[in-house]
Image (cartoon, rainbow, N blue to C red):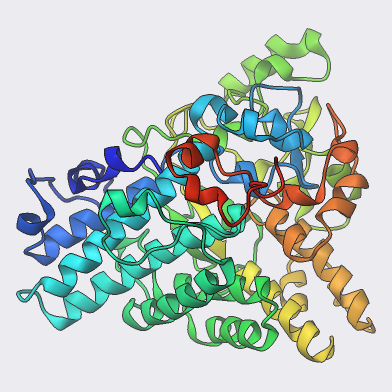
Amino acid sequence: MKLLKKYLLIIIAVSLFFGCDSFLEEEPRAIVSPSNFFSTASEFNLAIIGLYDTYKLNSLHGKIGLDRFYENGADVIGPNRVFGQVEPIQSYTLSEGNISAIDQGAGAPITWQDLYSIILNSNTILEQLALNETITIGEKNKIEGETLFLRSYAYYHLTNLWGDVPYYRDNLPIAEIQILPRFDKTTIRNEILVDLQRAQEFLPNSYESNELGRVSKWVAATVMVKIYLIQQKWEQARDKAVEIINNSPHDLLDDYAAVFNPNNEYNQENIWEMDYVLNVNPNDWPDHFTPRIRDEPKDPKKQDELSNALADRNEGYTGYGLSIALPDFANKFPLDDLRRPMNVQTEYLGFELNFPYIPKMYNLDQINSPRGNHGDNKIIFRMADVYLMAAEAENELNGPSSAYQYINRVRERAYEPDQPLSGLSKEGFREAIYDERKWELGAEGHRRMDLIRWGILLDVVKNTEYRVYNPAANIQPYHILLPIPPEEFILNPALLESDPTNNGYR
């Protein structure tokens, strides 16, 4: 693992994100070493800010980031053309030979390294916290809870993407880190569940306006539900989801579109949002969903007319065309579903479009959200997801009779008049969950992992209509995981000891 360049905590101390609505208005100070830096709660807070900032990098929640692995190659989005080095994931031609070139160096190798930099720096924070005798118990608890979550969240992604991975919880020297073997993913998940429960106990219920964007106890609980579902621990998943429903300050909004309104950030439904600020953050996560004017409209003779109509509204089609609603998604999305206009757009300002877009994921505003300089937050978790996870777990545990209350709560705002589900078998309800999560949460970073944990990724890919290529002939069972980037096991041959096939890629 190439972690030497990430070791010094000065990196995370100066990697801040700012904004009048964010919690990051600290002034960085020079650091010589962790031993003389971590003396006050403010200094610990500065280091934690650095962890958040790493999560905002293009390899994780910035730009296409983790969506590359959690949405591409599923049945919701795809490109409007064959493009760059992201294609191997969409087309399932991924290999050891091309994973390091994904997105011109901002792909899996960087994702692996940045997740481990969070783990390394989290371990440093926790070690220094245990040695500190000057800050209060309340301050210690909050720092520990936040750091435990941010470290656990890194391991959550590592185990999702690579399965068994190197695992360590102490502040080890680099020389020891670089010879760590892969550990069983079940062991890792079980231990981070303990850490997440402790984090939930220490984290606050909510934050004041100047700290919005930090993780609350309900963020930790949500990740626990997701891990329980992966492990098929239905009772624990159901109970934790119901705990969030009954005890958190979050609830569904009446209007689906309002959830994604950039003027309605930190609304009641959103459990965690990645905080971005105009003119501060260089990450431009929505751009891959935004239309490009050179692709639109359907009638190329009207391109100037559309461009002028957009400009009159201070709007623009300035994206990359990397994430477009697949024909399969657009054609099958129920026409009477009130969520459809936010998920499938085939015309705008009276112009027929060449491709269907997902407007909930973009912002055309060129004043407040220009290309490459967005201030829009990225929603990570929201309550509709929790309700649907509760429904899924309850159905697997006891059948659909008590699960309807959770799925129908989500469907209430999706149909007028209401169309509650009823009379389904356990298998029928399971299939209804497959679809409901697709319509409710499509393109939000959940779909491919859902298909993997349900064991249906290969079947879905083979039966989905794609646009510029068809991955059905290429997808293999081993594609549920990624290959470890070759530069990592060149540095650390122990990564191949337990699995010389590198997740089936050799």
